[in-house]
Image 1 (cartoon, helix red, strand yellow):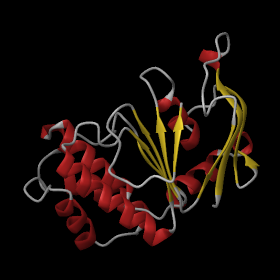
Image 2 (image 1 turned 90 degrees about the vertical axis):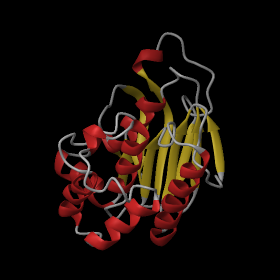
Image 3 (image 1 turned 180 degrees about the vertical axis):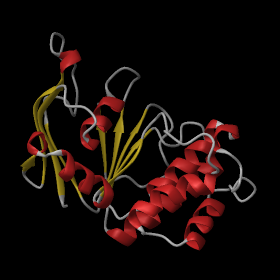
Length: 213
């Protein structure tokens, strides 16, 4: 997949009072191989945007297309294929399995894609500072540690776009740098795009475009 385009998209919640925005009610195209930061104040719809791009929600006017195909025409089988092979996602609420370990959370995802070896998954977890938490249940990790597990889990698949909703909001600068380097490296390998929302603490990535939601 090469492009995701939003054309005159507006969430239903903003229908009566459309905000001034660089995304809503605009034509915006995200291209594979580029990095986009979507900067936003709280309540501007950043998580909503991510949910639209991943197909979890469709309560909007306007049109979203993947390589020119209106996503409203996609059936569940097509969405599942897209999520397995083309669009990775780190939601703000992370959605980890609390009773599974950090490693197991990643292995569950990888069992669906076969994209990484167990050694590669371990190396990614170690690279983001989780070497002493590999076998800790996710529910017993700090929020920042859970964010890192969720990011590694998202990288356990092939993708053309990775959508990240405030992925480093609970990370210190050094850990942010390590996580950002891992994301950038994996995206470079696949020629993939980064679409990342942030309120005040973006990843330490050289973004090609900064959009203001």
